[in-house]
Length: 509
Image: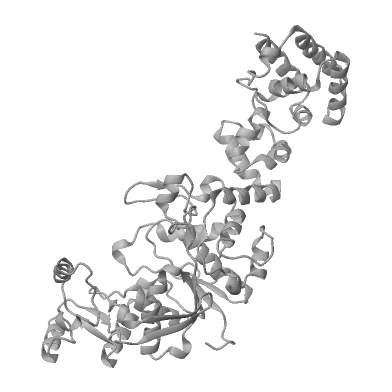
């Protein structure tokens, strides 16, 4: 491929279900490469397999990409000059090329029925349609020319298969793996055109990539075995000089490194593997996504980018602009990348800390509303103040309730097991005196309250820890939360006094 050709890459998913994080990473690497080279990122929907088509899946894919900020330059919703962007709408173009391959002797008509092929599989457990048995099957290579013409004239059901050459080696340079070679004898005669006139992936992907002037192909390592078929098709159709550059991305592996990460692993180990919730219309099953689990898109994208790529430094946090600037194919690993959900959660924590409160506000308010808090009564400034206090402690936005509910409601229970055995009348007297002290206080902020409270402890002759922990439990209900005097400041004087007065009898019981 000439180096001055404009960079055009494509993400080409099938609308068959939820979008696995491996699929999103493929989209991301395509996007980063395109943007790094001022190129174009195209979304093409590969819906040639009508039997696996799932209603709603295409819209879901587009929503996933939008959530991640991977906005295509061309797509079914935003067509450019290379449409249509759904393979099913390009159907007429495929037969022409399949027939051309037959005429040139690179492909043939196969008339075997599904039943006949099933019978072959029963006889030969490792059956594959290939160079060593094609002459014993029903196709235009084994049948007389007249018989083939008669069957075609009668409209007999048939497929078109590629005729893989014997005893040859097909090689290409992979941008990640270097020189890769395949023996053609090990590759079967793939179907190019199905009996319903729809192309298989093998034919469609080559025809469409050429029609859309795709310059580079990034796809998962699992497509590597198909590469020799695709390379021969580029050659057989006379387009070898226009063939894109290839890059086969490393697999995303299970946490233990044994095999490719699957939805089943997520179900088993309790983490999402889809970008967003997927509600399967066929089964009614709901699969949780990263978005609904409470991941920020920035964290999800950052985590995905570093599954199989790094910039060569120790840096781990990248926003999209940095990723675009630093992305290079040379830094993509050949080896599979183990998925680590604890690390994924760490990325989310870091991005929540980084996010401006205004960006998180609507999601935080949604969490509060879910817990029957009327956020309008409090105002955005109050919610943002609390967010400031607790955001360091959030793994997910959803954790806001667990970390901050006590700002919106009095504790229903108190974690007093550690405190109660050591409770005595002196401590009751201390807190009764503290409430009187607080009542007289005209300025109410943490900077004033902390020295006041600590001086009172010093005067009492008791230990700091003996009284600080109960004070926190009275306000919060448990041994957690941000600085206790900040909590007191935000709750306000009347609320703090009321909470102490409610709690002291519980501590005495």
